[in-house]
Image (cartoon, rainbow, N blue to C red):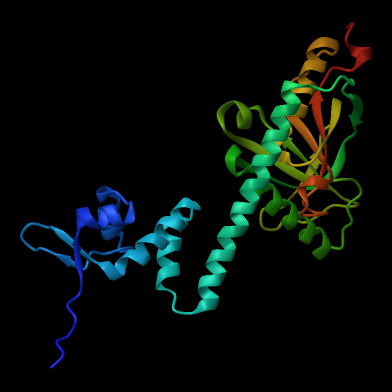
Length: 280
């Protein structure tokens, strides 16, 4: 008579050595329900694992090395369907590719800072006349500014379409000092339009104030605005008389036009005193 095979068990220490996962990590995975011990002594709390759990531990280790969040690993292991698992893995791989792209951009920017271009920075001036706009103004955390901007621009655009209004100039934004100095402050995003709009949702009619700006055009992602703002601030400190007021941004090519951040073009503006008024 053939006796049934007895499951091969390992102490938590031996399982740690077999999987190269620390005992502390194994206990954490057990408490999370990610990799539970096969047996737990009710008196001592001592854990034992099946040798058949080693492949699962190895899989978890590989996904953690790829920086997959633990909750996603748990969903992946609990998903019986291949399509569900593939979807979770594909989404994480896209995030890794995005992170790699950001790392490459940061390396390129760092090299540019270490070896700055010899060509002069192109600074221009723009007089912003009062304009009728549709706008959304809220207090915003600087770390959430980009998703907030994308959502606000989409809401403004749909509001103009629903009210049969047309944009007459590029969308823009006014950025308060608090956002940069305190990490949270008032931001206004607007679209100049060809007539008054009715307030709906977050959208309100808005009169764009008159201002004189020193400007620079930044190419690419908003993430590295600091490079352009640094050049603009240097110019203003040397050659202009700065005026009070928020920083200005005009999205010449932006989120409303394309999701390709490398194609974005943004005019950044620093308020300055008009030349004719400086001697008064």
